[in-house]
Length: 422
Image (cartoon, rainbow, N blue to C red; front, side):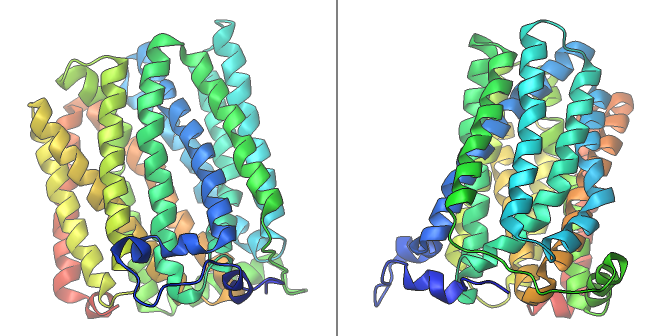
């Protein structure tokens, strides 16, 4: 339960026009002041995270010359999500979600600053980066469900799909900006500056959380943590559509996300680009994701979003295959852009459908199930793809992932009517 309901927040929003145009309809969640505040803080922090991510991937590859180490580091950051996210969902339903998010931000800030100092002193090793990834992932395992569960408190229910799409735009617009800045800063200022910028950027989201007016006051419960966790799992298990949405997000994360993780291999080995060139390719992928998020924001609360997500999943698969097999930079970037578009559209659509199906009192636990499956599949997929890429090459592995993903989308389109009717 929230002491400041979405309705109360909407009273502070800008008055809606009688006939909203395309732009106003696409960005209607920005009418809510609390949502604008949260979006701005998250955008700044995410930009810093992407600046570090670009530098970190380049640093790892230069230290090790190994696709496996890229995948392994990504696995270590994602592995705690598999272990702790379900518990994080229970905690998100039992305490002030803002306080949980603040603790998560402080914890993620420290490894970034420590790594910046180690790089500056020329003491960095791959093991430092891996240890920091493990700490960061552990903080995200608790912060992720709390962040997702907080979003519905910021807007009216009918604007929730739009808000989720705009959150996705925030992340991917930050990815575009962060990729370009990260590539440029890595080349001109050095990796230490990139890590330092990320550490400082956490202050933006910390300040926005302190200023946020919406508070979640959990209902008092004497139920054991394991009992609360079981309730969330049982709810998901008994709803076929929810199970299907979680499985689709898991499959997409496992098979599609390695494209982004192994992008430095394509940039350096296939296209013979340097640090800035890789940053530009990462920005192209992020720009496509922004386009996909804008598309979902424009769709809003339209019917048959489940079917739309499956068509986008099939398009994602095709884009991945063509990109992986391309040796021409122009066509490669075109299909990289389309892959970013489709990937974000799929995740935003699936996320919004899960949010709408989840009751408020169990939202944290249900989203933790989704978060565990979705985010947990990423490190497993990265580790598998990185290992196989070392043996068979990144293009072949990523193309094979795309083929498998296409047939999965086709099966759901043909056979699962509950999803296509959502």
